[in-house]
Length: 584
Image 1: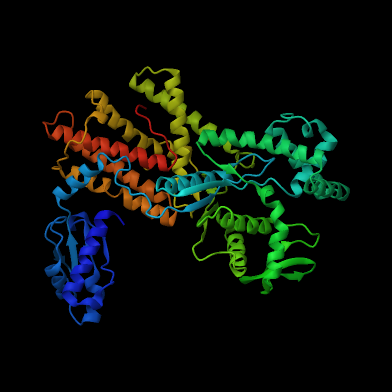
Image 2 (image 1 turned 120 degrees about the vertical axis):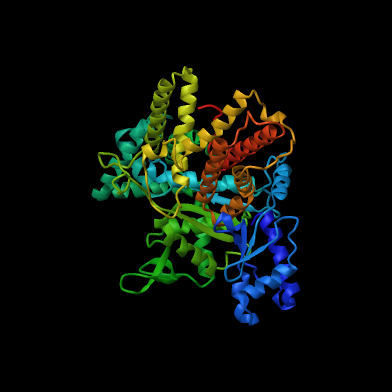
């Protein structure tokens, strides 16, 4: 809730008590943004909900509240409408004062958290010896945006990359490479990532069809777990090879992560099993050690077990996730742990969260959150794949976006008969291409699937990154045309006269409310919706109001409004991981 809404809510609560007594202390006044701007800016709906309790008509209740309501510093005189709605319209002078107050604030009026906390965002999480593909896109982009927003609010954020760097697949791959390409296990950079992936596929095929090879692979796992020097060296080389490839993509997307893979928690796994045993939760079932879950059943309707140690003594993902959870609470001292993965893993998280709670590992002041997301679909509505049916490599997807942005820019420059350097064209194409991919993803409600379309995401019109970047560049075009340095405008007063100025001003003052809602609900699309609406309101203002040709003090006032809009767009887009451009 933004500062204005908080003030109004407090005033309505006081009026309720003054009108009807202390029994109504704590009653929610149901203060919400007005559904239609012609009725005002906010609406108080509490009169309708109190009618039965007070034995009065809603309009009579609304009238009694208004008689005791003092919002004269903020609003025009309140009006009662319909069956008892109280409409509140913000005063122009109040809006001007609010905008003038945030001019000098680099945070644009968004307060930092009153009680900063250690928060963990677990995202991206690719597998070693495999290339990052389109399936990693959403986790990486959504997780980064959530981390950026929490960091901006002042929280101590640990960005963790829980990579798959341990287990049977490494025994399998090392055993296969010993036969066909032994130098890859002793020499750095002997393979590129494409060859490594190809060898992995062949190793998997061999593992699935050759029992003798299966046993050899398992022995390599045992050697790896025991720390055998040659196997450990080979494992480190394979991890480093993949890590370099991951880093190319992270740098392209401007993603910062701390890698803490499955191997990090490997020494802690026996302790997890021991603790569950001591707590009386562990049950042996067909040789495996399990915890039976409430609310989860198999096809026969029997309680479903979560296996924490297999019959052969090995561990699985759930054991590692339980170990990582304990470490994050006990060692990292995290108070909110956020896991960003696809919706298909929802049951897995519900299950191991339940086990951790049953074991008493989750303190009351620690919040666990699974942030699920839907699939990326092709334009045929099916899972996004290449024409040959393979999973789309993330590197190829990003390169294609940049390539298309490059071609679009070249076409536009030809139409406008503009000459630009190749350096300028490459920079703009990269920013636009990468931003388009990020924004197309983040602007969707993350719980839904979405259709990946280069044409739509690169469109200069509509709810896209190029549209937002164009609005930002348009504002800097005003500054260039008028030879204006926005930084030198100082704290010049803003005067709001035209209806489009007022609409823009009101929207600029909602940034704190939007960011607060994303912090709570972890839905970055709300910030996207806000920035898109802000861009539209600026364009309406730009189309209907003279800026550079206006008389003073209106000219400077409107330039300050332009600057505040640009700064708000830049801040909001930066929280989505998107750069801005002063020229496009």
